[in-house]
Image (cartoon, rainbow, N blue to C red):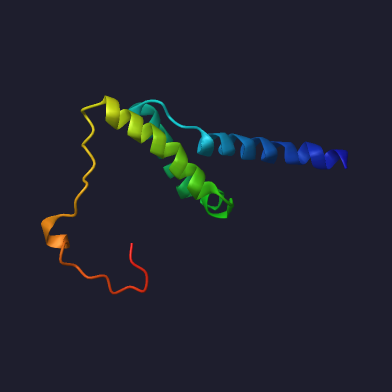
Length: 100
């Protein structure tokens, strides 16, 4: 049993570090971009981390939503969010069973 603890420790450490990355909000635009770059590398080389962990998508959304709101509120270098659909999209009809 002792050997299981020793051989699994690196896996547990990696899992804990990944959980911190997913759940930690960036506080600057540079931090947001760094997080996106890091997650892109994970998606390229270890996509299973993003695909198989239950709750990862929601944690990622939450970890980006607050900082984006904060940075947009403080920085004029970011474009303002578009609140209306473009004129050519107003007449589109959704034929899917569920519409968003």
